[in-house]
Each structure stands twice: as structure tokens, then as C-alpha cells.
Image 1 (cartoon, rainbow, N blue to C red):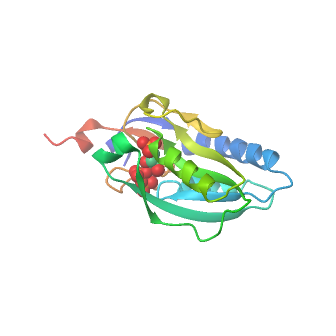
Image 2: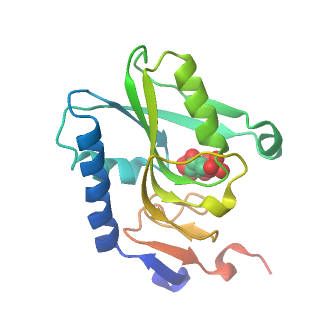
Image 3: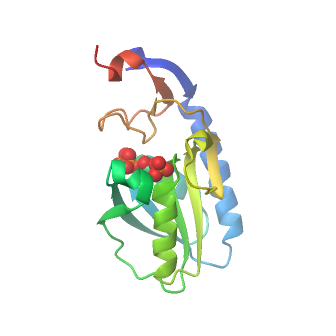
Length: 180
Ligand code: PRP
């Protein structure tokens, strides 16, 4: 699988160490509360699973799945909810958990939507932040690593649904995704 990579950016060990630190920050900030961690399917599953095992305060988990409308999303920022949350948000402290923030459109839409549903507070935790990709201004509250604007796979990030399970994150070789 590493043959498909141009470069490994972060090893599994590096990610694991950083995820523990992020978990400790979350646990510290939410002492006395029981935050609802909302994983955005599918990419966030790996990060979420690692993260929550190092959060030593009570939390609850839920999941949401989104899909963009392709080109129209670029202009409108409208994101379609494919699988909605199971629990009501009224009065809850919510942490949205993502694998990557790129344009910021998904998170902006999700944050606004969940706030409208009555969440008391919303913060964003992402494994990776790609600030160069931003189309709308949004800043994650918790971030594992800031990454360059390259085609990254692994640790939840996919190319055509593949590579998500890799324990490390790497830059995919152009030859893998560019058809001659
Ligand atoms: C990815 C990622 C975020 C979103 C970030 O999801 O998991 O949800 O894109 O991009 P943005 O900041 O430009 O909105 P994707 O739609 O690829 O689904 P996936 O998680 O199933 O891979």
C-alpha cells in the first residue's frame, strides 16, 4: 500500500500521540458537562474511535452522514443530510468530530444546523485541517495536525472509498488518481 504513496506525512505513532493530547484538551474543557460527540460519517470514524478512548469524562456519541451536491455546493454551501442524529440537541454541548476541514462548507452548514436545533454550544474537533482549501471562514477548536493542500489518504481519508483504514496519513501518488 505504501507503494501508492508519494510521502508519509504522519505515522500511526505520531497520530496516536497527538490524538491523546487532543482528547485531554477536550476532557479538560468539558469537565462537569457530558458533551455529545457527533461523528461525521464516514471519514471521522477512525479519529473518533481513537479520540473517545482517551477522554476520561462522561460523553455520549452520535453520528451524522452528509453529502454535498457537487458543483452547486461550491456556491451555495448546501449540504444534504443522509443520516441524521438520533438524539435531541436541546441544551447539549456538542463537539462535531471530523477527519478533515477543507473548504469548510460541510462544517459551516452542520454547525449552523445543529445550533438552530437548540444545541447550547458547538465546537469542532478535526484530525486534520487544510486551511489553504478554505472557501468560508471557519476554524476548528481542536485540531490534530495542520496539513498542506495535497491529496491525502489514510486515517479516515479516502480516495474512491479506499485507503481509509491505513493507520498513517500520506500523500497519494498522482499516478493512482490521474488517468493517463
Ligand atoms: C469529507 C470530510 C468532511 C468534508 C470536508 O467528507 O469528511 O466531511 O469532506 O470538506 P469541506 O471542508 O470541503 O466541506 P466526504 O464528503 O468526502 O465524505 P466521507 O467522510 O464519507 O469521506
